[in-house]
Length: 75
Length: 352
Image (cartoon, rainbow over all chains, first blue to last red; front, side, top):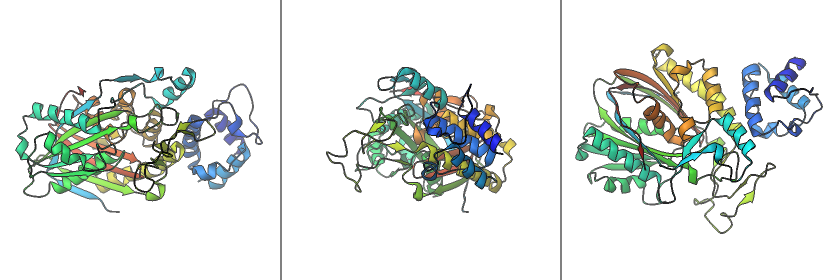
């Protein structure tokens, strides 16, 4: 489940030629911006049926924070 | 959940007007590097849009559309008993713009004129009000105007909104005819999300002052705007759309006992290409039945649904057609409608 999430996140953010790790702060990725956030929202809805309100989302700092939040709410 | 239902009333003619000034969005690079602009536009899909000049208001675009409609349909002006104007960019704080338009258009003093302040769901909300009032025996014809100059609302230095919005106005004639079958509306509001899309100052809660017009850097991305310019929390707007729109869509389809295959066209508010594309995929709709005008006109708020009908379906509405309309935005408010078109005359778009 965790591996699948990390692969989906990598695809969604269009990260190429490098691995991403649970401890990464995803907002520091050069691929991250408000457009990438829209892609992430679509992926979470499509693959996990999860929506994270922005207020809560802003408190998620690392890939692992995001992954744990998504997996705990996944339908 | 309450639904509205009407019989024997429908849109018999539509006309639209847009400013002549075309913004080539890829070249809209005064405040951002062109590679950033390209990335944004490739995603939101707004290649061109129209900007009104500083003298042209929403009402002027609607006025031009109404003149075209009157000319093309040989409308007897004194048969119009109702004028509704939907906009959040009116001429003045008072009086209401609809009343000024009653006079400019030469309509009778007996016309009931009313402004409705609604954003992206405004065409659907407004149409339901027109249909409801047209249940009155004495009302013969209604003129429904819907105009926006959103280009004047948002900061060109805030990349979240700088490339999205455009201007336009439409006029629709609504008449009673037995050929129109039943129409159905679902209308919703959630004021707990008032802050998702908002202009904070310039009303009476936070009146205009020297302070409210000052431009400030507002976030970590360096976006700049004043309190009198609109802002949008795009992420939560998208979350809201994903949660509410498919639900309302399915509820009205079910309530109106309409098969998806009975609907000829699905006309969504033109939010942006990414959101609309995802919504279409989520609802499993045939792209050939989902017209889009966002490439040409951008997001024109409440005008986007009727402008899409006018620009994309002008030659596609021969005979009887069933349309589903879906609008959502500032408020938040959202609505879905299933309406019949039968012999609706659609005029060429006028440039102002």
